[in-house]
Image (cartoon, rainbow, N blue to C red; front, top):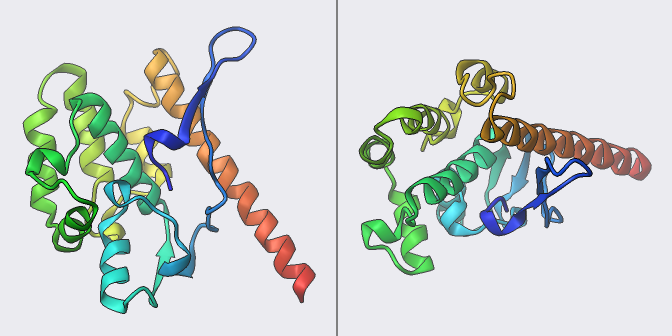
Length: 193
């Protein structure tokens, strides 16, 4: 359930700090399939394919947990931070049910147009390119994390800016926590066998 309320900034002894994900009790192992009923998400930050599967299966279907789910959520967070507006509210969608309906029926062009209209100059243009790569309605078209960082130098440019180093640390932290969760789930599975 990646959303702004579940990310906190923690300063270290040198007051540099890092962003840390909290409320990970609903975390799932990466690259595994889960019943959609077990995947915790907030609709405004949820990937369209997750909500489509929930709707189509009456909550009984399965969905593969990939980086696309978390990267979509990250993209929704960034769009809110950099535009100072809610993606759905800006389109007149004000209820949770309306958000879910919007996600179920979402087309790639809607997201691409929103990004193109709001991320036009300077550093915002680079952020817009990054968002277009991660905000894929079809989750299979989302670039892998290993491809994103080298492609988008403004994020992974040697940590020369506060934003770059914070984003890199947040992604590294998210990946490390996902790896740790996978190991714990593997250990529990082994114990059950």
